[in-house]
Length: 206
Image (cartoon, rainbow, N blue to C red):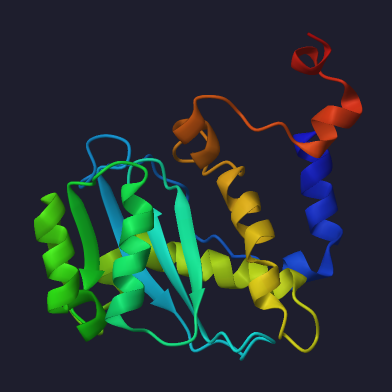
């Protein structure tokens, strides 16, 4: 099935146009921040994007450092109130030890700091204009945009409607260096894919 998938991707024009060209062999992961699941989140903003039919221009993205689980929210403006509300949705997974962001105003605002102080979350600020400093979030942003480019309409105004599909594809794909999907690391079991339903696999037959 893996080989069939590779052959299909080779024949997919969108995959060839937007896919990454890997020049360096994959290396094993060397975690430096997160010690356990939901220990640390990296936050970043994707945008400006083409204005969607709902007037969205940005995606506020969070990347969990241990499992590489990604979460996002579409926004029209990058404001401190939006960052605080987004952080509250992350706390549902458990209070993290760290959040890693750049030092721009929406992330360093007093309102955000107050929420972090309330829950005992440590803020780690990275150098402004140095995209590589928050490498994990930046790498996901690149992947997110490439996946969206493959499936959005020609007008590109429907990208906000396709985000759930893109996130599902990412969460259930193999980050090869980790040798496990983000879905499996979070839930402890691999996701049931549509193909598995069609093939009537062993766990479907039980």
